[in-house]
Length: 166
Image (tube, one colour):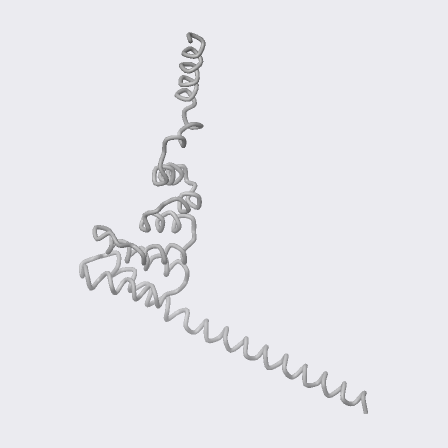
């Protein structure tokens, strides 16, 4: 009996002395996610957070902007809903989707007209959208020209093949 008690005490001391190695033994998912987040392991933390706001923050920190925007859209906690909409805008902005960023920032300003960050970022997103539009149009034009060249090459090849078969 004494050996059993001694073994049990030693085991408990080893677990207690284990520190960070054994930290996960008694943590729930949110606590594990919070620990991982604190360690800068944002992707792993995002996979564990059940709270959509905290998941979105971890995804944003991990550079997963589209996933972060989706998580922020799912926030149902009233106390962070406006901040989640603002962060959704930031996520769309980082992903280069300026139109969605503008929508999100506009929604924030409807609820909080004095929100400085949303007002500033809304104007910045509008500028980026205007600047991106000519670049996008030029890119689309270049793609159309490339497609036209490919079609012409295919037609020439078909004409050559039809001449060979005659």
